[in-house]
Image (cartoon, rainbow, N blue to C red; front, side):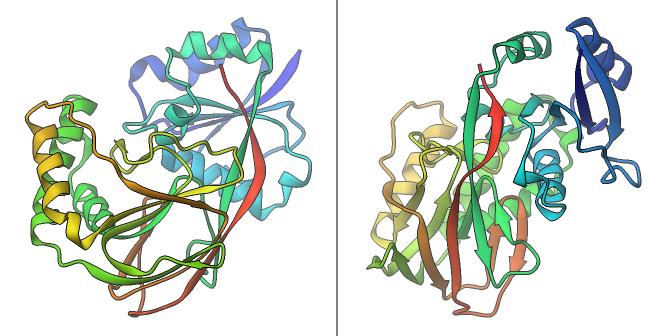
Length: 298
């Protein structure tokens, strides 16, 4: 019988994803389960000898668990990681194609299909030394900041939260003044004035806004997504169209690379969903750590 270490955020999902229900589902599928709630003190002191690490929660829960793995250096010989996406956005799970019901997701683990997952290493930023989803300047730190002020309980469905995010994003675009960005991707200069500069590892960001639809977190390259100053009105019109239910696509200017040097005239940056305030012009180096994680995928 395979031993799984289950990390569960009991605040994610609904009553159908309680501690007992998840343990029962795992045992019904032939797993011996050790349970830890990420809301309880001491959950970080887990037994690393499990055959499989299972994370039940959203993107924030996944990041918290991965942070512990990195700190204890368990990734020198990591067991595979399996996800049970219970959050609102689930950017990481959706990028990996994990979108089914919980029972369906557990069933495909037996196929043991592994997907390697790159990690972004952020240098000289002690508050956030890595990212799984994205690192970026410009409008998205302000969007994330505003959406964090609104509790999940204020939205009946994830779709309503997405709609609100688009409304807030549109307002930010209209009022935001593009900033100059010094940007070097694999030694080539791409500096300019932008509304946003996002170093993407997943396809979507924040409240499930897809700005890098072709991103592959296991291809050994970041997607660097840029919206230049001259596209401000075009981008605002695109978001306004999304609010009206229009399906028109927007072509984001995207570069590929794995060694990024960046500085920004603004002061706020996000690392996944964490907002950090820097002094203007602080130079940041970001490098890709290829295939550092292994996830089970459909």
